[in-house]
Image (tube, rainbow, N blue to C red; front, side, top):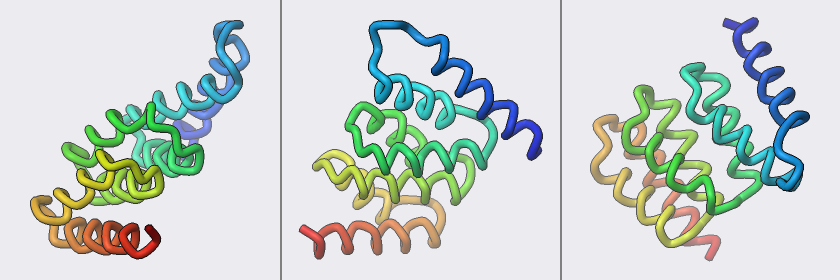
Length: 123
């Protein structure tokens, strides 16, 4: 499993080196993180979600919403909720709020509620 993560990270890095010449470094990084977000590897997926939150671009919102809604594990949905809260757009915060009400997992609902309430306090 660890070897697979390393191989995928190297593939993402290689992609960034040989990417299109007309894209900026930030766009290339974000595109690679979106590839990681769509990976089947849980560690890579959650790490990519975290880094997308650090970049805070709204381009990733649709992919993160998909993970929040249909992620297979609690960890995936929680990492998507954290990232959407960090991005902090009206759409992303609404999705976290809705997930706090309707997610199948009590743990995910509780954490989404906490993230949403914290975002309200910060604004």
